[in-house]
Structure formats: structure tokens, C-alpha cells
Length: 415
Ligand SMILES: Cc1ncc(COP(=O)(O)O)c(C=O)c1O
Ligand SMILES: N[C@@H](CCCC[NH3+])C(=O)O
Image (cartoon, rainbow, N blue to C red; front, side, top):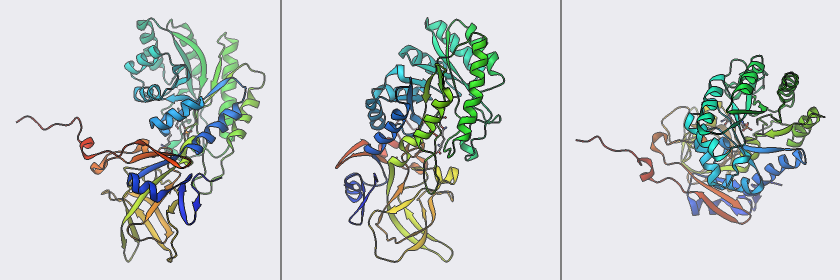
């Protein structure tokens, strides 16, 4: 089933024609399918089944309150990396006891706030952070549940910018160092050691890197238990890839079942932190063609969405499909779809065969993850609106920014 079907020549989000969304909300607008997010979350929850554990949505992938609220209602937990993400999850009705707190640079204030609200656990990424967390906990008269994020030195075979589990990456505690850090954590009065965590990268399209990392963690878990440090949960992070073009990532169930099989008789709860695989293909960025600029060398279609709205093509040379909203009978030509931003890297797609005219609507597909969340105001462009479609209804879940929003909090120098 397609969440963005083409019906009578027109692209829809579920049952709503995209032309209607453009008239109602303008462009550029991020459009998300409620059914797509729901089904993707359920694929994880169903695969986990009765095994103890949690599916903690990685908030960085899409932190819109409407999306988080939908996931909270479905029973999701959340993986957060900042005080801001904590705030969003709480506003969306997420339960603190279903939150895991990751990130290499947690501040004392974020740690304190998270402790006070009672998050499930802290995925500690360095020895310095461990000491700080202990200090914060002792001063607050509380005890922090701790899981060390271990860097297993596994090649995730993904884009180097989104690979996180290699020795040279900034993330986690080297696996060889982990036993000593666990011993230290167990001795600190403000900490309660509960688990182990890893996250080796994003957009992984094969199982072996996940399972190699898991095998290394299981060896560590056994070494720790011999020393009397018995862990209650294993968090394998997120990272499962999606199909943008022709990638063939394993189904969610294959990943989760393979991990559960490896856990076998061990009494370990399983935590997962998927982001992209819950929402990437649940979103499309709706945009209008402003001008066509055919040149001797290249044909440029200048659209009203830009790298500030979706930076993935510029940052990772990411490929995302572009669909015309209305099917055209005119012959196609080859176009680069570029935005109005003053950067050569401002493109959303290159060399696409499309029949385009000024005023046409297009949709950049698979933009539900790391789309709006990585957007900015570069070139003083107000950020796009966000809409969730549910069947034949559309809900505006973030209004387009206004010009007044752009200068909020700024002031002229006193004269
Ligand atoms: C710690 C952590 N957990 C989960 C995720 C989510 O990853 P993905 O969106 O690839 O599932 C990320 C981002 O890569 C992350 O850094
Ligand atoms: N933002 C990246 C993924 C990084 C994941 C965060 N650890 C992307 O769009 O592909």
C-alpha cells in the first residue's frame, strides 16, 4: 500500500490531493502520513512482541509535536539528545520512564532536568560525563540509571558522515575501556548501572554490522557479569536504513528477530532507537517550481524549497525521489532542481527527467526523517509548514514561520 498514492493522475497524501494541501497551506510544506508512521512504529512493536523492552523513537529524526504525540499515543518510548528534545517529548505526552538520554555533550542542566523528571536511563558517552552525572545526582539526592554507550569499532558500511561506531568517531566509550568504566560506575554513589548501549551508524542496509556489534556487546556483558555487574538491558541503537532509490534494507522484523535470537537465554530487556525507519518514507516536501532556467549546459528548475529546508542532498549527496504532483502529457527533459539560496550546493535533486513548467507542484519524497529537523533560516528564509494527513483530513502541526519569527529576540544596538 502506498501512503502517497497517485489517483487520477494526481499525487495524494493518503486520501488528500497535494494540490489541496498547497492551496490551503502554501509551499514549501512538509507533509506526513499518519498511517505510514503508525505502521512503521507497529512493525517494531510487533517484532519486539512480548520480549521485555522498548521502542524509543529517535527524536532527532522528526521532532514535530504532532509526530511525537502520535508516537506517544502508540506507546513509543523516546531517545533524546538534548534538554530541548526532552521538553518536546514531555509536551507531547511522552512518559519519562520510557525515555533514554543519549548524546556526547549533555550539559549539567540537561542531566539535572532529566533526572528530576525521572527518565529511564542515561546512555553515558564518556568518562567525564559519568563523573558529571554522578555529581549532579548526588547533589540532587537522586540516583541515575546508567547504560554506557560502547563504541564497538564496527564498520557500519554507510556514508562516512553518518557512521558512528568506529574507533575514530567521537561517539561512545571504546569497548576495551568499557570494563574499567563500568567498575567505576558501579562504585559511584549517585549511579545505578542498568544497561549497555551502542549505535553504530545510520542508513544501514545490511544485518551483519548490527550483529557484529551485538556479538561484541554480548562478550562484554558476560565479562561484566563475572565481575558481579549484572545488566538488565541491551540497547542496540537505531540505524536501520530505508529505501530512497534502490536500497534493499532488511525488514524491521528480520533485524529484531535476529537480535532476539542472539539474546537467547539471557535475561536482557531489548531497547531500540529507530529514527529514519519510522518516518523517512512517511514524509514528502511539497514545493512549487518558481522558474525554469534552461542553459546551454544544464537545465535548472528553481523551486521554492531549498537546502535550508532539506540539507540532506547538500550534506550527504543524498538522493530523494522527485514526483510531479500532476501527471503531465508534455515530453520530459533533464533538470537539476535547485533552491533560491545563494550556494552552489543548494540543490534538492540533480539530473531528473521530468516535464516541468513554472507554477507546477513537485514533491520531494522520503523526507520525513532529518528533513524539517535539520532545516534552518539560512538566507533569512522562514521555515516550512508541517502537516499530518490522516485519511481525508489534514492537520497543520507547525505553522509556516512568519517574517516576524525571523527576527524574534534580536535587537538594534542602542544609539
Ligand atoms: C544515539 C542514536 N540513536 C538513534 C539514532 C537514530 O538513527 P536512525 O535514524 O538511523 O534510526 C541516532 C542517529 O543516528 C543516534 O545517534
Ligand atoms: N542526519 C543524518 C543522519 C544522522 C543520524 C544522527 N545520528 C541523515 O539525514 O541521514
